[in-house]
Amino acid sequence: MPASEKISRKIISSGNAELDGKMGGGLPAGSLALIEGSSGAGKSVLSQQILFGALKNGFKVSTFTSENTVKSLLSQMQSIDMDVVDYLLVRRLKIYPIALARIGSDAPNRLLNALRSQKGRDVVVVDSFTSAIANQTNPTLILNFFEECKKLCGKGLTVILTLHAQAVGSDLVNPIRSMCDAHLQLRTEQDGQRLVKTLEVAKIRGAASATGAIVGFDVEPGWGMRVIPISKARG
Image (cartoon, rainbow, N blue to C red; front, side, top):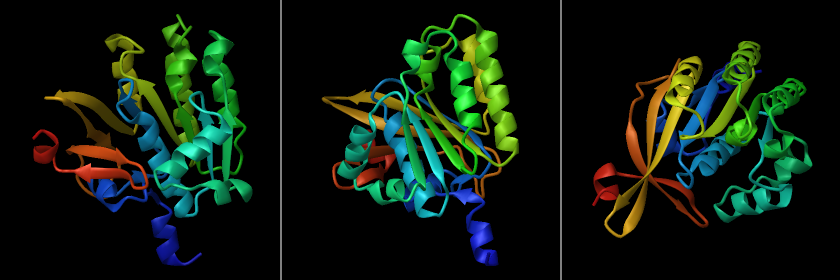
């Protein structure tokens, strides 16, 4: 492998230069990343953007979705100019619809076993982990899930999880955030008659450049994620 390719494969680009710039260059490979936000804030789109960028840069990706079927996920991504059908056909991408909420309290363990089974994968996306803890009353099992994900990341796997901001209490979400190498916080703010989506890059350990930016973004059909200046986003 050429030296330049070795370097590029250490960073998982989103495929969006503006977004990468706000994320310190992209996610370092082997990261445990948490994409957190309320319903409708853009968690799925951001995870799909990173998934798309990873595929474009030669990584093998699996995604576990409780939000879509295979067909609806492909259609959704095509509608925002992220066509991944070819990657699916050559098995660079694997899509696993999974009804985590129906599994019950054992969902975190079942999901963990599914992640461990992804041999030869570089990146695994879970959208959303909220569904796995919908019926979970034992916080220890949730923390154990993240601890075991960290072990998988230590072996080179990048794990990206989306989580509804209010799914767990602050006594649990704070340790989860601490364990994660990357924390991306999404919000939806009311600005007069419109809703504005914002992304805060709370942290990315090992990023190529400084993080901490708060940016506004739009999701446009045929375009995808488009970063917009905060001053414009807030009028």
